[in-house]
Length: 305
Image: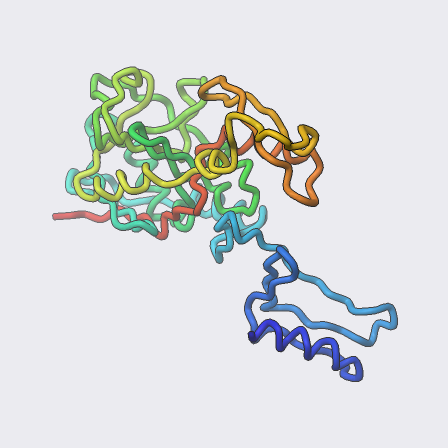
């Protein structure tokens, strides 16, 4: 009702100089949800209404005060690079406050001292604050720690780094349930800030990634995060195995599921082109990014003595 009143006010107020919409934080225009916090409608331009707004996709759950641009990300990376943490103590424990609950991690500082120091540096410099778990795989693992999960580009999540790497410290420690290990690229010495937590035993990872910690409290939170609906899960809800009889094939797309390798179909939404919708569907089917953002609100390392 409040939105309707605002729209009526706009249509009958052309004699005013301007209208500030900030008291109504979100305004729906058709299918678009618009953040009106800093919007003013200016009627003095002589060329119609000057309306600058930020489009928000309500489906993605990406509306967040955590989003920052490249300058902000670079500032965080520089601050973290220059931050010098206290020496690691055998009593140190990492506390990750997430949007799903608290996870506590103890370290194997005698096995992977450089990775433990690096993780402490990133935690206590604030690098991980407001980043997200950008990859979750049910019954396998959850992954986070990418600074690029703080920008509004969903597609680059998982590609960021702090600007430096840590040489591998592979060991005989097993990737069992609750283990915390560093993610990396094909280069064994490419670990930077991204880490993952094993939901179940993953022996095929042993000796391939640096194990540096283990969850001592909050495994139920890890489980809950791992069961989150992903982009793939959500997209599959709109896919079917056969186009219904009587439907025009031109109104549908056919794709190969990258997991099952089977043909599946989806009807093209009104207003979408076939090529753009095909591209979006293929990206979603390959994505393990949680459909709703799961945030690391704050990460700190404390001496638990």
